[in-house]
Image 1 (cartoon, one colour):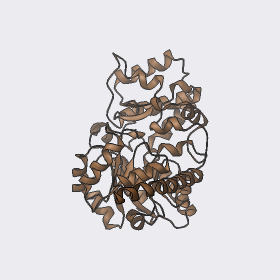
Image 2 (image 1 turned 30 degrees about the horizontal axis):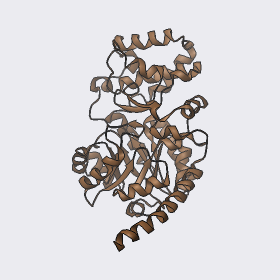
Image 3 (image 1 turned 90 degrees about the vertical axis):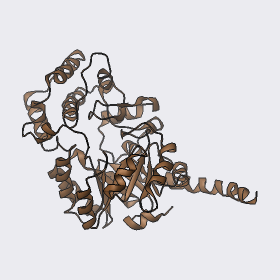
Image 4 (image 1 turned 60 degrees about the vertical axis):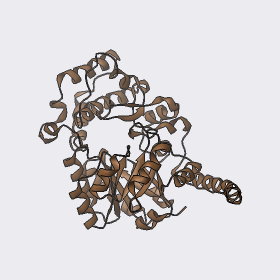
Length: 378
């Protein structure tokens, strides 16, 4: 299973695990894959603690981080020194408050509200260039970080050049063939061809159609990883057949014991069907594939206010999330998840998933050998 990207990054197998949980990153790294920590949910101080812990538990092996540098965002809100919830437009704020009241979701106590506000303060602008810059600066203090990935468009070329100067590789998610030209111009080393099946920020093109298009657009000097709907060894074989050098997986790790999900979120995850993973803008203001809930659907109804740009829509989402989780309302919980969620019904482990992937990969490859020989003979 080893491909050229393994040699460039120092991993044994080209299974890339995206997760916001440090335990997942450590376990996938120990299993021979390459962990990429979603930094956007951490404050700079929290990220420093998480990376230090990862450094101490991966035995000197490399890993990466993922940040969110969007091309379109609310620049005025990002530049403001005020808390985001204090500058939210009244229309969207009132709509959310009415929805939660109508659903009988209790208000937080003053102490709970104060704690939640303080917890959000240091990371509420992470979905912007300035916020991501702060996270990258933290990562650069950790030599074992060997890859930085931008999940929203091409990273600024000056950041790419700086990271290259530090010996790091740079990746970016790509949902359309024409995105590849901008990524190439920025100088990225890895393109993650993310099909619409994936959780998180996705486009409309399926993985099977998208990956060969991105491979062709990338050219021989840029490695391509296949993403979107990948959770099995046979899909890794398919990714290789499409021209990818590896796979990028996210949703499949959510159901592991090492995952950061709360018990309520895992309850929602294991109950979800494939068709419950829908594309909505409720979480960030940009299209995210997430588990459908009453909350996500409320913003799709006639008369609902328009979604805000990052980072303001993020502020709405996180303010509601605290109240929803405290109330234990599974029917109101939305979280990023891809279409593979329909295959996940019980808790497992990162190690078991990797073993299952690799065993099925070998079985599939062996099953294809006679077919290849038959084609050669004909």
